[in-house]
Length: 307
Image (tube, rainbow, N blue to C red; front, side):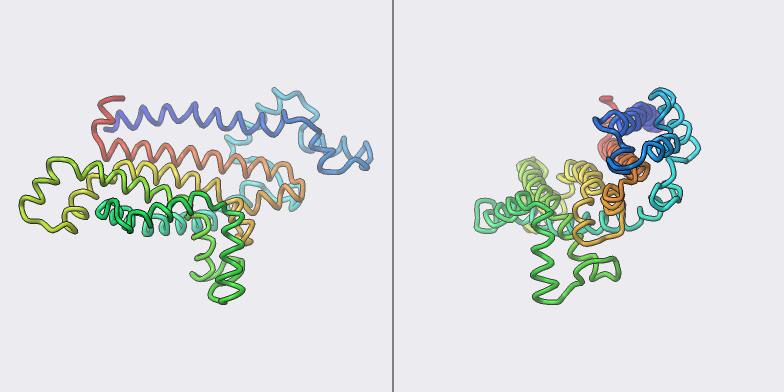
């Protein structure tokens, strides 16, 4: 087991290196002059050259890349042009809010989708199954930038149940979590239903029924327990997507996380901060996928034998 995890960890290193390189190239090699974008076309040439020197953009790309890697090794990913504070510290202070929102969205998706998915499998081809299909289609088709304002209008403005925006108590996280977790809940609902139906045809399910167990015990104790492996895998992968997909939701609800920081940094033309936000989101996605891969191997020993 330790040897298998060590091999997976070694494979993680080139993946992270590739992500870091891709983020660097994406920021540095895109068309246009970032200094001109930051200062505007009417800025004086001296101001442009001063900012270009401050950012190190007057050096060759290879030298910038090596300096970039050296800074990452020291935990230094630059200084914000807008606040003049270290980018790493600013991003670190925003991660708790993003993680809080992502975990709340994940909890909502799991609590909503898995029970409904099992119920849809147990009531296959009934009105309950059809209703679950409609709910899942609604969740997948509903974009965050439309669902968020809709929830605000209904539950904040009309009913007054939840705050419109900001981070506060438990009531403040409900609407952002539902907005962010709806698409994931829809995916998990259909996956849970199909996984439970696949397991329900196995011999041990028929044996459980032959022993006199009720349908509730058969589905919850036996079918669901053996159908969770693909669900766990998708939960891990989708959690990484929640981290990267929180940008729109955080902007809609003025949630003070990484996504909101990135949008405000783009508006302020804070080049180092934007690069740091993109890098941390990308690295976070890779690390979550790595942990999911390891968990998959722990839950299913056959994975370790085949790799």
